[in-house]
Length: 133
Image 1 (cartoon, one colour):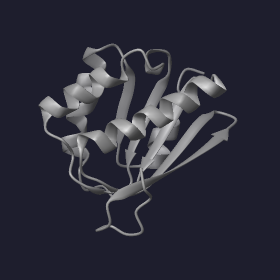
Image 2 (tube, rainbow, N blue to C red; image 1 turned 90 degrees about the horizontal axis):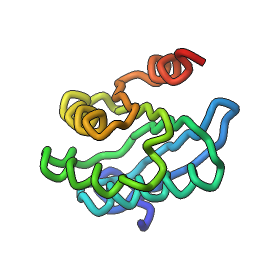
Image 3 (tube, rainbow, N blue to C red; image 1 turned 90 degrees about the vertical axis):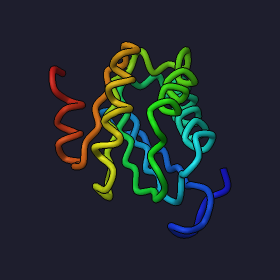
């Protein structure tokens, strides 16, 4: 995806970092299509496979629209076989504007056996990721 330079520009920027506890993905820009969302998750999956890490913290600072349920189901379908089944994922809505709509994605992910949660707070997400270690 072409990195976006602002909330109204198309595209997103994905910065992946390895921490002792797992992979951290910081996403900025604009994501308002299903294809862009799938592209973001496929890039994260490739890095998870490359590193072998078992936890991922996604910190979403993007602008855009949370897809409706049918498109979220397509997203989860695209994630199958990409390595997410073996990781714990915390997804943070850093702007705190769409958490209730993102929870639909959490429910769909859990229906498919993914260990995932959506948060509006990075500190709580990090605590959950480490719970049980």
